[in-house]
Length: 72
Image (cartoon, rainbow, N blue to C red):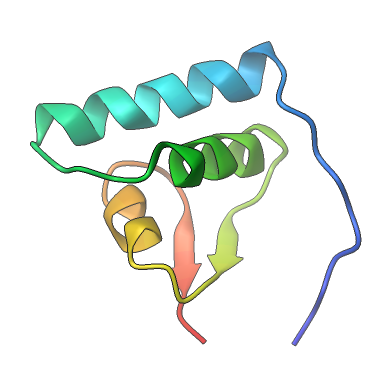
């Protein structure tokens, strides 16, 4: 397992990515925790291609965003 000790802040790009993800989810009628959407938006804006989580919301997010989810 790789653990990155990096902090990312929300900026305009991350906010835009997050809002795009939420809009896509809402258009499909999917209810996902807004904080998970923000985390995904921040990750994507900072170049992440994959996240490792047990949070099921990220499985829904991965259906509408370019973010691979690794369940651990």
